[in-house]
Image 1: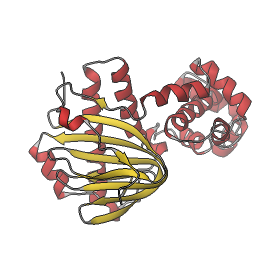
Image 2: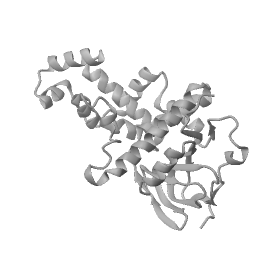
Image 3: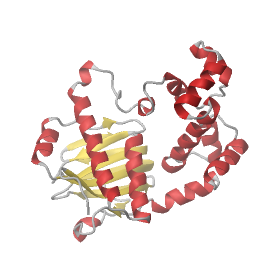
Image 4: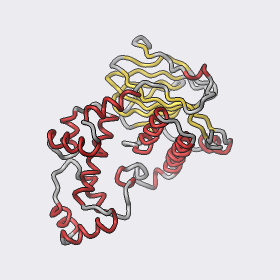
Length: 296
């Protein structure tokens, strides 16, 4: 199987925890762990240090570090176990450790890796694990680089949602920043002091579509993220993307072929599943420590 020569992700899972549950103290002898909290709160103990578990934050756990965590309200996580094959990469990570917790924001890149792992679970491909290795390595390196000049730059510049889309096209920034609002072509034209026809021509040349159709696509993509990675109701999600609930449901069905509720049910069939990315991954490491209500 094709794998990256510097870093390999062996295991990934999206795990939801109930209130007052967690994982007992344990350690991994030859694996690193990366825990990202989608939503929720609690505490995590790493060696002798205790940290708050905060939404949109990541927690890096080194090999042989004892750790346990406990959630004080319903919480959702993305959990990875990986190893660094390259000594140079491992030394770089040790030399430039990022703070715990580490704010990642919505982290579309990490969520995309989880989607890839689910895709590989359903339809295995030799290229997908390699893409996950490379993608996660890119996330770690970006975090290390950002931490090296945090004091000189504004935080989260590398992980803001709008920078993930066409940074050379500010109209996209405007659309992303106003997904929750009811905006029209005239609003866009007025904001940028252009004629509406000029805005339409720009979008046709760059994206082969109209501004309002692209706005619909952005709203649907954002709603899919909410359906996959949040506990908002369908009505709440509709409001978050600037649509009425009935129209949102019709639009979503027309684009995806299923209702928002059906999409969420499909996405959650993999919640709690251990997604292995290498067949000979040691059986002793496959098992996630049991969730417990009595870990304090």
